[in-house]
Image (cartoon, rainbow, N blue to C red):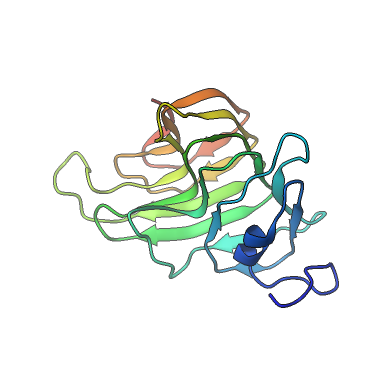
Length: 204
């Protein structure tokens, strides 16, 4: 991460890239397996453009949550109180817990903000295997993509979720793809959802 972040001398961690990104930045994620969480807390702008995390060319980078902790409801990629963010062309996998009331999420958008685009990602094996309290599976929860508008009266708005594939998710009492709370103006289009053990799309 002391490198200049160029094609020949790249940064090591996605988090460092997120912490340094200015509006309009295009962060190319190269081939490989990244056993890392990513917390995005910097915004792009309408005039300069979004902050974009994308695969490089035809490469297929993988974010892998194997062995990483799940603290409360937590995303392997987490986008909090920001605007003008694009996540595209990533594979997100193997984020799991066996603890009750811990909720792993592939991509978790929360708080307020807008113009967030989640496109052409592959999300799989996000799983909760916790033992539920009863037959209704409460306390056993996971999501592939979750968008939670939690800061009313400010909303999460202008959300695009397009062309993602979400599969092999163990969700318990939760949903593959959910928009919940104060979410205003959104498009959920052409996503392929299969081989999950509970609800496909929930808009609450």
